[in-house]
Length: 117
Ligand SMILES: [Cu+2]
Image: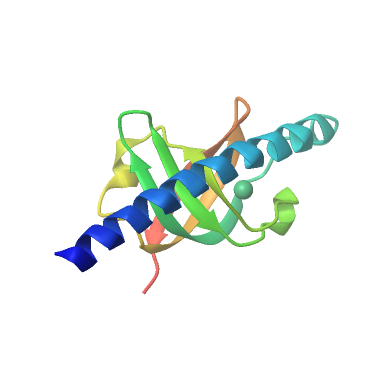
């Protein structure tokens, strides 16, 4: 019992940390948006990550991802927009995933996602 309580606390702490990082990440992305505005339409970028939080109600999926060179994005934890509910299907916190994202109306949106074996 005691151990389980501790792990829940740790998870809550991680979630708060992830949100703080996500907030910071959005600042970085806003900067990239201004720079990218002069270039061609953004392409789909593919990356690998780990599911940190699923928020079906808000349509947000928080992923910890590695560097995404094509987006000039370093490794970070950030929230992606999800417009299709099926993206959440079969996903759980801690899952390793391969995903595609594209910037749509200023928000990085998940366009495809699949679990990694
Ligand atoms: Cu990012």
